[in-house]
Image (cartoon, rainbow over all chains, first blue to last red; front, side):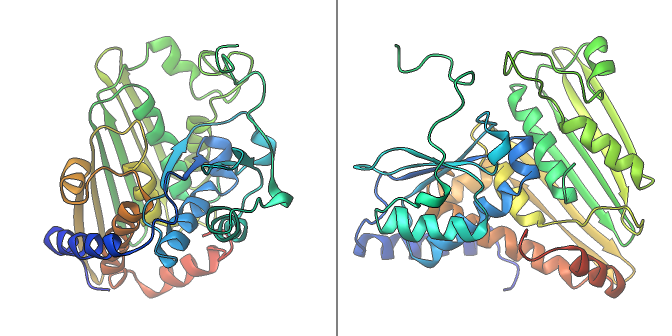
Length: 134
Length: 203
């Protein structure tokens, strides 16, 4: 790939936007949050973030929100990620490597099935300051 | 400790974002044998007392996570620099900002592998607390060299906000193309070392 200019990037985006309008909205309102604290980084969270973007791009899913957060307090099962898909329970996955990241896109985001062998529930109790106003 | 140099970078630039900076400037300059990196922010800065303690891996200000001991980013980095004949300088003034500069001798046996620079820049540019980030990246070797500049505001003006997978995939493609252009100036022996050190399962 030759070095892209900002102008080429702009054209690529316009082309992509036209394509999006023709496609079904597979990942609508889905969110992936990657824990990117010191613990997450040390355990390989960055290649995991990169893999999510790579696989979503491969599957031509453009509308999943992909964000980063700090430590979720689950340093012993890093890299941790949270996946929120409408109509499904919010899930925190632990020990997510690049293979698991691919599986989460294919099975959870697209297939609407939980990846049960890497589930890790919710953030640790002392990290939650106020649980939903309770 | 982190595995790659770019992991250290990602870890400590996040400090600048969390310090409430409206502008973070990053210089990432590589030669055949050395990496020089500088991060300057206009965040809240640190008092002399905190600056003295922040390199102690057992120190934490206790504010972010009250019952936990955190704060390993800077100690990790300064130790890794020490281990391979590098330098580490921290300067900070309360209310003005902080700058961290460090260098690694890349031909040192204990130098960590570089990692994936494009994906690190991607994670930094799309960090939720990043307001404005300017990255000056260069590679100069015996074979010649090149440089590029990234500006978050400029890239967001082209792509829209860095939120969804489609936008981030385009950004990823753009950043990879900038890094690939530099590859031609990498010298053989270092490139081989780089490949040998970088485990495919991690990068």
